[in-house]
Amino acid sequence: MTSVQKPKTYVGMWVTSDGHIRHDLLPNGRYDEARGTRVSAYQGRYEVKDNHIEYWDDTGFTADGDFVDDVLHHAGMVFYRRE
Image (cartoon, rainbow, N blue to C red):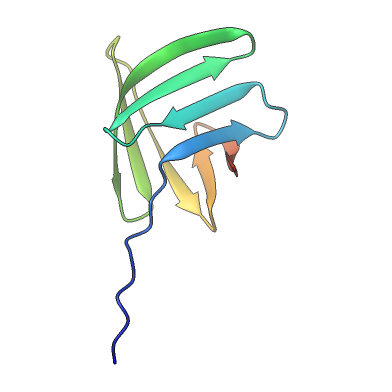
């Protein structure tokens, strides 16, 4: 008997340790970033390939990051999955 593993998903909320920056990776390939009390400070689309994420903000800004041991490293910041 072989087991089938589901592909790893990174959909959900990712938060800096101080909670100031929050990335909500939505299942439709969009993201919504909040900063402090500013909700939806940045929005755009994202794509994940293996453990690498690419962001394209609606204003034209681009960024990327990597997931390492279920921690997101992005633009010099570290994000943790919020359950």
